[in-house]
Image 1: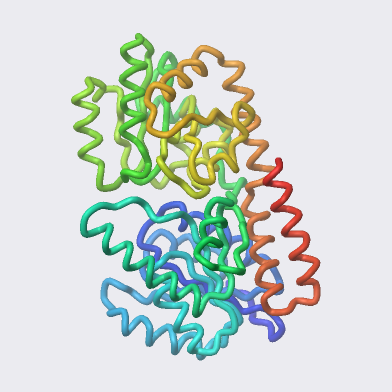
Image 2 (image 1 turned 120 degrees about the vertical axis):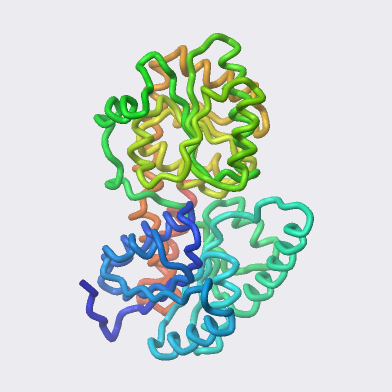
Length: 401
């Protein structure tokens, strides 16, 4: 049921490409779920693709418009956005990726929307050849759009915040990703899930979740599994996700003689349930913002091993709520996995601390409260300055926590 519009409320339209179900989309779903409960904020959403995100948002009573990029030209989408923004008279348009920002931010400005907010969910992934040239072009266009049409940029990590300030952005706020804690099943599902996949109790099940892209560093994790197998340890690896490296990773596992140890699970809708079956979660990324998969694994109470890159050290307190290793180092991954396999008590402590860390600092409710405070400050909420001060105190607390 749609929430009735109130004349004095802040009217916000989120615009997202929604061509994937990945970290940015999961974060947006959690953000919308929390913002929809706030009585002073009226939400609308425009997506350039239907699918999983549209389905998820249908539960929150938020109107969703689809301007399908597969069937519409950019000019048609821009025209539809201008008409929609003009009709609804939004206070804020909030974008999430370079494509929706480049299209929606200028149109919002030209349509008289007072404020455009953009969330930067991560830094650009490394490309080569023609793709590298294309991304460099898109980035240059996006920087100009930021300078001319975007009022406030939200960064999901301190590293991204610093990078944005280096490009000349002035109103940058660091608001780290949050997760819906009540969406996670309990560990009682563990035995049933393992049994369904034929994983016996003597197997140490290592898991990872993410798009099968070069930046995720999955070849290093497969090589770590090879090292553990050569040491006589009974391990199995689940890689949950899909992407351009699917066949390449399968070939690597065959070439290293661990094809039976590496299970390419593919894209799954039941990631939370699969997490319950794992003994540890390993994220070997070469770069990240604040990965949602990491927060999900920590919230599930798993001991986590992750690389010391991007925003990950802002989430994991090394050897307290997880273990950090250097990127691109299969030997360190294997050694750390082995240590946790041989020390069940430490693994249990890490998992409990990981869950507590997410509950305290990285809930979707806390994230949404900070985003709402940014909205209120922009439109001149009477408590805007106090809320901004509270936001800065929260951020400072996270940095030193």
